[in-house]
Length: 357
Image 1 (cartoon, rainbow, N blue to C red):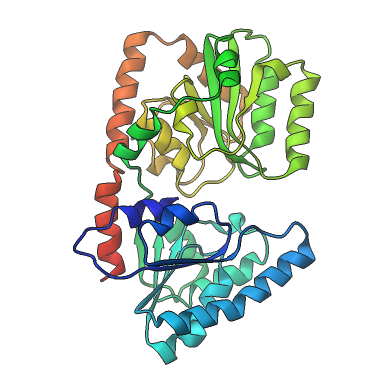
Image 2 (cartoon, rainbow, N blue to C red):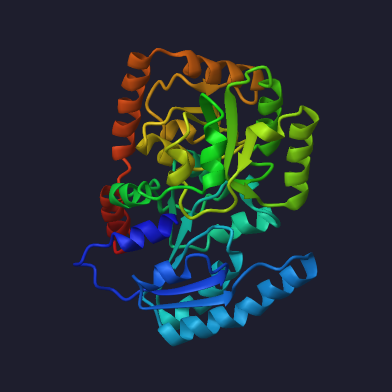
């Protein structure tokens, strides 16, 4: 999504042809197709078991080779430091086709599912690395001394896109759900251990006494067993009727506009798109004080919580619930102003200037 925003916002003066090779997932295929010369997806979805997963990864290698040979690019932009196959193959073919390799890195090492050390090493094969926050630079330099050309370009948000998405309305079941509560807490994204689904479950359980508060997950779970664990905790505390899971959605804003505060329970982030989306709507955010989030939210933001203190997290949520309207309005204006610093128009210019440098 971050890359799509940047592709959509390219200056008309930048007339280079873009060829997109997607190794897995086709979610945004048709959106990208509107703005690039060609889209080719190797696998529409990842395999369900380890053996098939390995097979898929190996099968992609000759397709990467064939595609590079077909396009003969001037620049190979790899949209993830986790994509070691693409980095290694691109490096092997670089001398033959004489292109520049740029890795657009959205991860810290703990975000790599497997082979973390190998993936870190392959990053050093790039001619340039673009990261989304300063924490990643420190981490990279401590691990890979050979990577010298590292640039920070944060994620962005497109105000006009958000305004269009806000016009949509959620399903009637959601509207019926929210009408039962005076205050709604949302958690947004694909729920995983790293995203702190278990911490969110604990927070919900410990807030059972607040009968006028409802809880929303705008998204769903990456693993069925995690979802079952979450629902078990909620059910044991007799709170199922106070939790709503929207399922995967391409429009978080139609739900987010009805909530009062966003809970970011992540154990690790590089650049929180969730925080940016919430700030754009002036929604207060409560988050654990983890690396990188302070680069997104306003300076001296008052609703950071010591990691991973769920009691303090609850205190901050209740403070916002009970805060007077004038103080909240002031905070909301500050959040919207901060979001403007990450407008796609501003960030896209920096990004494409750096790609073409």
